[in-house]
Length: 134
Image (tube, helix red, strand yellow):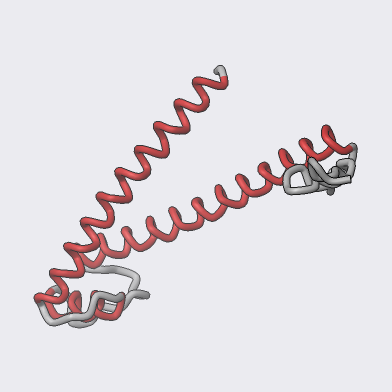
């Protein structure tokens, strides 16, 4: 794959992720509105109370078996947790690779991996006089 293809694939993945997040936000807003209409708070406790009232008076997050809506809710919670963990792991990978790229640029520029590459006076750069000053 060429760099252009890699960039295109990354841009496509980012656009798809943004669309999915917008869809998720819309569904979450609908869930919160439905809970409010039924007299429950928007948080996890409100959802649990709603499930107890409408589907299973004995509902508990930790129960081994759930009624159909509660089972879907539990699958959704597990999926969201997995996505959060994956997102955090990806962020860590990006951060580590970004640091390595900065270090490589520093080595190329200054010969040292810890030197600043960018800034008003990068490490290793000769001091400069302002124009027109002696």
